[in-house]
Image: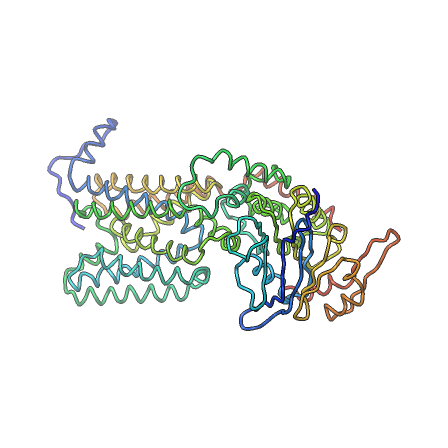
Length: 305
Length: 267
């Protein structure tokens, strides 16, 4: 990833306004913040459902399938994002059609994932371009994003969030209680496919920021943290989105001052937050509640014959 | 509430298939509005399939079926359904209240604005009606089987149905909770004039409250008053197992042998 060359030492201090001005002084940083925010918002929101539906590994695999798509697209002269979208959306539709049967298919998913990386390796080799391209796709290249790509990202992010708002309730219903949802007329199978296709779009967006390999940091980590702190789906969703945005902003800011890759900072902040969250809220239930639960169970045992 | 004679379910010569296999046929029966019917029968006899037909989740293989005056249609808001439960994940970060709420607007697309307050009120009412206020705000996976069953019942009630279809709501409950939940269902059904079909393995907790019993066995359906169907001869024939019906000094019936039957075959 090309490190930006800065003529003057950047300002950093207690003047928050000046800090923000400094962070947004250059076009590449503005673009990074614009794209990063949109990507984080959609990743955080869809991530809540990814974790709730137990599809973290499938989401991870989707991004790897995207690697084959992105490198393949470059090979045939298209833009990487086009290949990403085509590959992840097709794979997502297939995964969605499997529905509940997708769970517990670790071996199949893992093999497809490994094969996709292999394909991507072949495409990179055939392209004979620099390894820079592959590294950019694998680990993200948010600082190289153009204003045109920001526009594409904005459109994709807007559609992702809009689609999720439209299906929110039936999606939650079919996630929590598939049988009743089906009986109540929710198109469970169609929703499963739609969800995976929306996820494919969100993953393709997120790949631009953190790359194929670090996708967990933006899609899974914020949601996993949020689910430890709230038992209300609407709050969990908002908290997850807010955390994803926060991780991205913080990672970009640190990377502006410290000459190490932004992907490293975002994943480190996500991981650190998850560790802190586990320490702070080891379980959803407080000790008092657990005590009450145990008492109730004892009571029940006493009354049962 | 006065019991109307208009039928809630009319089946004429209905046959049901499970996969490529016909599991029962020639079923003709009527369930009246406000009736409480226990559905009994050995495992795999097609009790859950009967509910699937009534819910419109699968069509009858033959015959005609009318539910609340219409052909069964998936998504009928007049039917409340509680399916057979597998275990709910203990770490599921969702409150019982959220489950109940889905019973009102879980099948609605987009944002539901405007009637948020009245929906919350309906959720509260449903939770109160099953007496679950104390734990409705706790993660549902952490509750006991009886508590979860109450909240799932509240979810079905929140949709303001005319009919309840309950698939083994008493399974995995201890005897005391079986009786409590069965009586709760009966009470709610009486208060709201609901027609209830309840699948069960053990008839004993239900004997004091059911109007009629629907047996699914030997590829057919039979319906009748408990006193007619629940006899030693009838049950032993239906289950292909030695079952005894005892009568105590108060005239109460008690069925012996079914518990063992269900324990042996439970999947």
